[in-house]
Amino acid sequence: MKYMKISYNKNMKKLIVSILLVSALTVGCSRINNQNSFTSDDVSLKNKEETLSQGVNEENKIQQTNHEEIEKKAKKLHPIEIEEQECMKKIDYTTAGMNECSDKAMNAWFKEIDKYMKLLKEITSEEEYANILKAQTKWKEYQEAEFVAISIIMNKQGTIFQNILSGEECGLVKQRALDLRSFYETLAFD
Image 1 (cartoon, rainbow, N blue to C red):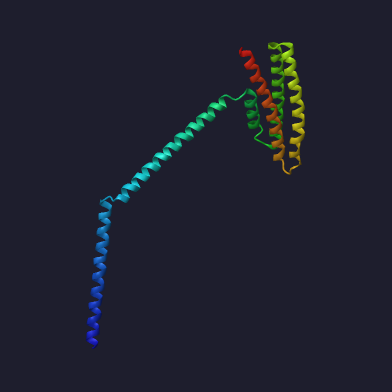
Image 2 (cartoon, rainbow, N blue to C red):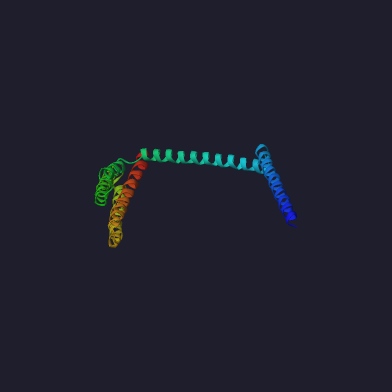
């Protein structure tokens, strides 16, 4: 019986080793076949990779186009805007410095308003200019009221709100200056 058990164990070991060997060869051969042949999944995956690659290329083109558009717009900045940006760079974007730059820019925009009011006076009749002057007076009232409303921002905690206040005020004056310039250019075009 003991001899039979030993023989049985040897046969079992041989059988297990044989099964493992056949399994290893089968798996190895199937890997080689898979590497050398393309299935529809492989073709589909390759198509997806190409599509993704094209999408990335398209995205890069879009980003490049957007960057070029931004550069074009940057070249069209008003001299006051350029001066304000240069001022910000010089002061290294400190809170107090940014407020100072915005205030300088706002004062420059007020000068632009005065400039275009004078130019409009030169190209319009007395009656037309009186109407423009009336509108400017009403805008000045609006601007003052808006500055009071915007000043509520100063009640917020943190110095960043000072920058927001300065930027909002400057933006309001800038828009009026640009509106008057546009009005002048339209009338002068005739």
